[in-house]
Length: 275
Image (cartoon, one colour):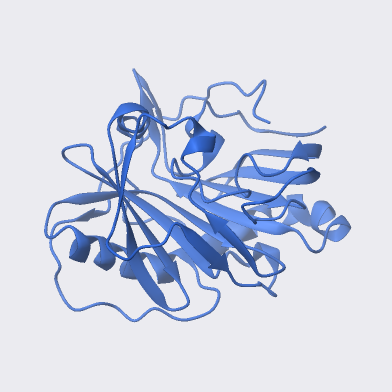
């Protein structure tokens, strides 16, 4: 669904990235139910520090999922062509996860389930999950394609737009789609940026509303609206509505361990289109 999308160069110097040097104080309180990125991140950060000690971890991306009905979703390494990566699950961690039904406004920027990914200085990737007021480390990704993909992803700055701000930014543009499809699922993804060669893209929110189910078993076709939002200024870079997409192969069809699927791909310039 990203065919024809071209590279845009965004000159951004990322300072004050989210780096986790030590455990610090005890675990933070996490609200239950649908929460924002800012509410979910501290618990996730603590879970990774607890899991892997005091090794410096940089937060690379976060993904929040909303589903109109309760479903089960899972990590999907094979679907992403990451067979040459090694995934070592944390002790007792599951690879399938219930996503509670979400009854709120799709543009609220809140979600009952958030996934996070971190990188340390050796290039190892840690995954964590926040849901139902709890945070847990899922495990580690190492080697192969994973190392190459995450090597170009920049850490999320400490001060970025919270997820409700991303929802506000796309609310007007997505209004028609959500009116036509009031029971859409939603994905809120935050990435720290991408650096390839001399080109740097800054931190972005990727917001997607879809008639596809979040369930791992999602199939068939659906309609979709997606937009990319500057995560510091709150401006919409790109918005697109597609009348027919395949369900199940890309978020929101599964928890995607590379983060935001196509958000690591070249980014579109400012435009709005429909297909």
